[in-house]
Length: 239
Image (cartoon, rainbow, N blue to C red; front, side, top):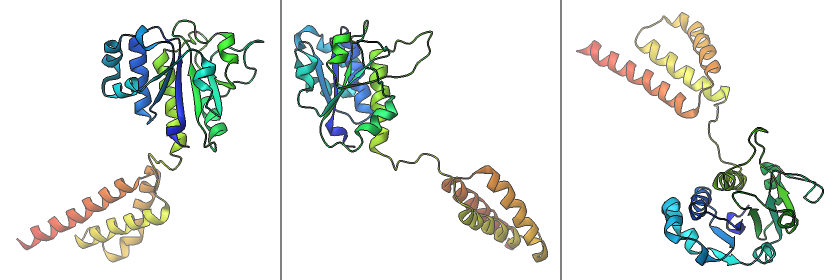
């Protein structure tokens, strides 16, 4: 997914600071194209910049249109964000991750349309879009802040653009055995056990470390600790 082809459209926003917060949310996810249904002169640029902080350039480059149709005319598809279903609204509402999958292989421009802070998108505004996406929230308080909604959708788009990104990744057993061998080697160097006791010691550490679900950096840290320990023991024995 090319994030440079994603266009965030704010329809009739009322509060300048919300535009700034939306700019910051976009920048967090590497999305830089902002379109606004409204007039630039209707907003306080200084109040926008207060919350945009280092993302104020998104506001500076924002494009302004008279309607959703005009703002999305050059896009392959447009998605209204809404929490409400109804006869006059879209029957199918994508979840954010479903929407990302839906547009994953699209090379053309994609517009995601967000409504007014107080009222959201009207029926006519939703129907001006090709499809719709909804962000699930608790039934007791379903309304989301505009910038929060922008943040959630942009984050899902960002993650979809980096499918190979890894956070925590557990090492496999073959890699774990190298750590166990390192631990056993160094314990043996300092005389912690006799050669005959090594298999039991290896089984002990393999059981503990496999349950710990080590990452690569954790495995390396354990190896470094035991290697340094053996080195210090050797130097102390010679002194």
